[in-house]
Length: 347
Ligand code: NAD
Ligand code: ZN
Ligand code: ZN
Image: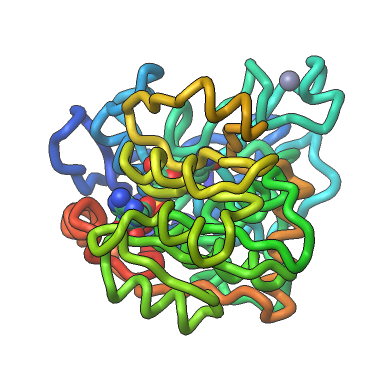
């Protein structure tokens, strides 16, 4: 029972996926009950990630639960605390990330690679997420929102921020090296800023000129639209290839170009999740000693670090707000590439 439910009926508003590829339905559903290790979060804002669109479409080999409340950039206020939890209290400001929980005991959890845990749960995918007025979270995996960040600007850091910050770390470029950011959407627009804050030179790549203009405003040193010229050829010619290319684009073609944009010994970091295959020439991979590596969100520690960049003003999310009722239009706009930065639902 939630004492904070003002209408006394223990109901909340949520956007629900009932069937893949169908519109989300705005429903009144029961406020979930918390377990001993959980907190109940009164969601104030939740970013809309392209992953939520993949979830609602059932795009990937592993399907989400149905019905599903999507959302893994939900931030808000703790309103109830499970009996085992001592490190959080009501009133704390927290976010509920993709890594909703992990086992804490396996090889991956024990070696600081909790995002690889085979027993993990994922917010807005295997369990309900932040497109709702309330969300249950495993208290051990929520991360606090820094005091000076408001909910709306903090929300996208919980996925877009931490994911690209981690991907740049995985790319192992040194300050002064060139990196390429493929896709300047929700993820890419913060990736450009993390890359600059980490001391890299940045080439931004997107098929929309408005997004490239945004990338430039956010610090990108060079921009290239692959509709005008092969981006890999441009990058090889202009800067001799990049040490790391971070591909956030939902496009097989972008992955192909991201792979060819790296210099010898460089890394192509796969982040975007189009449900397709990439083909890689063995000869070039061997001779150029190029790595292709996947990177999946980030750990709680990565998330704390990513939030710190935002708290210090080194990374600023570009957000527009929408209401829960507008979610289907937001999904359409996201699919059509019409969104600059991130849309954040306010509740
Ligand atoms: P988004 O739609 O906001 O951004 C994608 C961007 O790619 C858009 O700006 C689009 O114009 C651009 N693009 C499309 N085709 C391109 C091309 N050929 N070349 C260059 N750019 C191109 O999506 P998002 O929320 O940033 O998410 C991007 C992808 O990352 C999704 O597939 C999502 O599921 C995935 N994702 C992965 C992780 C992870 O941990 N690996 C985390 C979050 C999201
Ligand atoms: Zn996401
Ligand atoms: Zn584990």
